[in-house]
Length: 130
Image 1 (cartoon, one colour):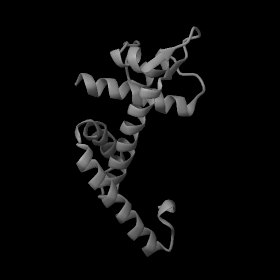
Image 2 (cartoon, one colour):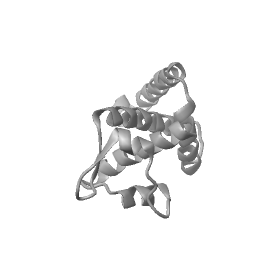
Image 3 (cartoon, one colour):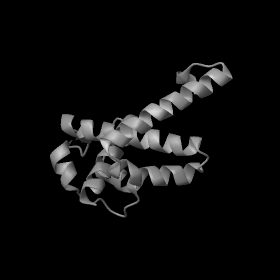
Image 4 (cartoon, helix red, strand yellow):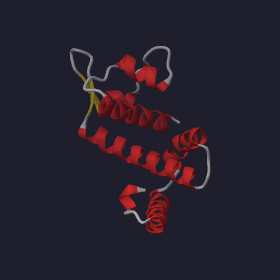
């Protein structure tokens, strides 16, 4: 669970950084549903904190966050394609993204892209539009 928690912190920092130029501990706590900021070991190793409180991912932190975020996006998308309600798909993706093996994820990724291409052909679109 510790690794999962660390990955969640990093993913949250990535998402908040994409939304705003300033990411602070209180923003992370609010996004993750904490009452007050809880400092993760991951934040000490994979993120830096500026004097103004701005939190930024290190290069290694960014690599981990990008990987987890890609998994989250793809898995939640796949579940919704299968007919799972969005809220449930997002919740389940948050758990699955941490435990799925690289081999299984790559197979799932390939299958989702092939499914999107098939849907695009049926709708006369390119796969990027689906």
